[in-house]
Image 1 (cartoon, rainbow, N blue to C red):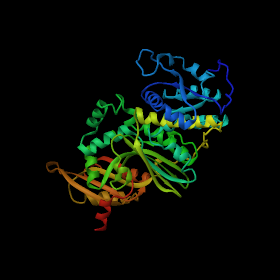
Image 2: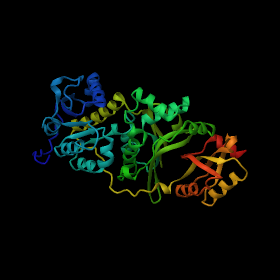
Image 3: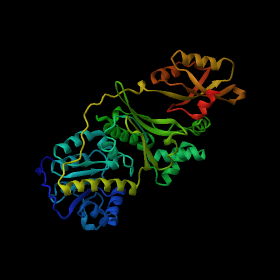
Image 4: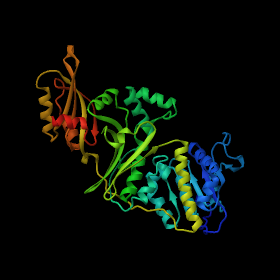
Length: 452
């Protein structure tokens, strides 16, 4: 791209009669945003003070039928970024390249940018935000996290006076659909995934969703803004939901919990701990009742207290709505000649290993059904500073003298818990640790049992 001459920042003209927008990409989200801009164009123009005009749309496939006039489309995406008549670029291509280079050049060319690109913002957001701020331009990315739920703007503005203590959320709709199906209908993971794919909730290759990459990017973005320092996705611990079974779901229910894939980021004395993994969540927690395609983020601020934001987390209309909301904000700034609204965050947040996490744990073990097994397990855990809070045992196979025990621990350090599991006596006591998960909060059922 260096061979193309750079264009200086375009002068702002508060008296302009139209704001011209170029779109890069016109898939599901682009179509939703375009339809909203057309259907609500008069109301949007009133809110801004001038109308918005989509002047160019960059695409790859010229043969695919689309709802916009054919004369708007071009396969030359770079030409849109260099067009002096374009005021705002909406990037909806996704991925790192060529989207990253196109956004960077758009900012250098004096164009404001709206994007829904979570991977790009998670991995290169600090650099792009700094460039936008330097050039007094807007770089908005509300649609990159949570679909139609306003999350970025509240963190940047309404909650900016707070020190965020912790944020925790369901930020991936696909996994929430799958876990809801497993919880409500007793389905196994593979069956729930197949149905989600058949209904269009999951991709043919579901890796990004079910293995936690999508949520990892989103938590990296939210945590960077919430704590004011760049947190790389690589610093966010990640686990997916493939290993969850309907048996784990059933035990969670008996113990007063539901299982959700959560993204969690919290401020500790010596750094930020950010993580994505399946979690036992008490049924009385506000996030526990967020089901299906809905997402939600629960934020704890030092002054505001607890705040939860919820809504549809994906899809053409909700995500397109977030794109249009960002665009309206940008256009208002252009209209009044205001400064850019890109809020930089510092590089290099100190992040902590998942080994430093302190929480409760659930684990399910296949054991020999004979005397002293429970005492042996409890003693081994105790040797690693892990104590038990609750237990449920069932006989699996009387002929083989095998049983299944489910444990909930008291809060302990994760490094200690992992060492304790590794030290459990093998054959003759613990035949297999079938599964384990982290537990957030306290279940009313468990607390009532302990009180008795």
